[in-house]
Image (cartoon, rainbow, N blue to C red):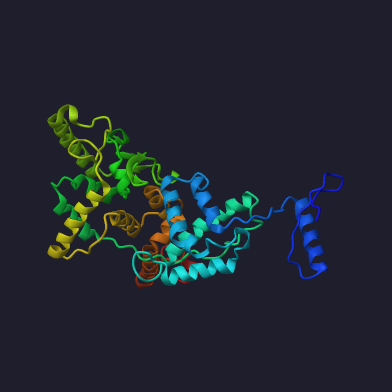
Length: 389
């Protein structure tokens, strides 16, 4: 068939496998129309697996290194073993949905069983992003993964401490090497990497503000300083008076350590929560110290066992339960949107809705019980004669 425009140079293609001449003519006309409309896709023998390997090698469209690492896991562990051999232009929505069903049943590569709905959806995000790139590069006419997996509505309820449990923990941690780090985590909701990357120059103790500008995290197996998790994670956080005083005391401790270590102290990094030598701490080591303390307190005081990241959830939950606006809490946490905050902390907002119903009921019942009247019809009011007093 000739796909060249009328009056232009001939562009001949061959295609076979049609049952009838009518089918062949119909396919030729569809291809000519697509070519004229600019939506024609050149046939290719490229497989899903080969395409995804090339896409990962090219950087997946320039995403962050941590995102690229997650995409690589999705491709190598979950997608390629299941549909990697399928020709890219032949993969269907049904095949993709069947893959997600298999992942839900037996996709866990560490333990027996399947992946959670959220983990399966992460695979969908990766595959959909990759196939969108294929559409833009004219390798596909449309994205077959569109609508293949719905985002889970219900997230697991966050584990967090009550105010009493948090006080027990902070009291027990007082005087330890990490006491200032723990209080800062609980009072600001900052992520572990953000705390470990915080510099003294990022703190304005006179105004009581901490600015998140970088994080210390593991990227590609190597610990390094880099930008925060997302663009919205670049933020300023108000500090309470107690935390400001704690930071001032913590700085005095750092000054003592700096003088003790002399020239070996890492003043160049300017880290607030560095090691005794001023250098960065391994996030995993910091977490293990936290976990040991929590386990001991759980046995002694009965507080529930949580992860260090759950101090962030505790911070957000306590703010929301105290009635603070979800938008402010979202900005404080550095979430991409208020919707993310509402989805994560739906257990709090549902309690607040119930509390609101109780409060409005108490308000109305209170008005009825005290028989408060409209001032216009009180015995001494201007409507007294009209009301019959």
